[in-house]
Image 1 (cartoon, rainbow, N blue to C red):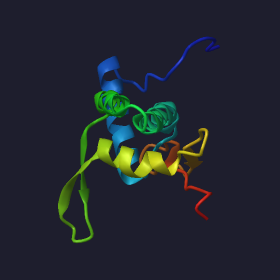
Image 2: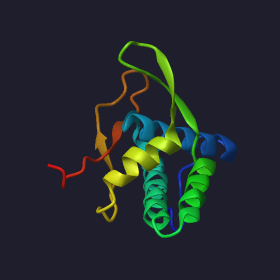
Image 3: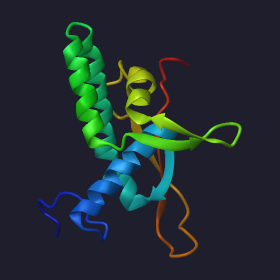
Length: 145
């Protein structure tokens, strides 16, 4: 029984788990959908939800107090990887500032949504090691449709 045991170890030590979590949240924000194992997706979901909520709160508070918006950006920047290299349409690599994308594109999309920004969809098992696979994605804004 796993009573009162929170989190997953994923066969890694603490520093490796934290680095994995930071990088995966940054990838999720940057690409808005990633394919990973089911255990990693379940580990990632609460962290991603908290980061998006923190960004939403920072945007809402920055209207009356600009320092609150800066504070929220600094908190987010300390909790996720800062940049990601992404291929554009031409096939060239370009650096994406994840914090800027979160505050400019992702968080404003969910301002009217009280939570539940991510969705986990199970997939077939991975051929090599038969691991359970899943897609974790940011949900679309239903108000815009």
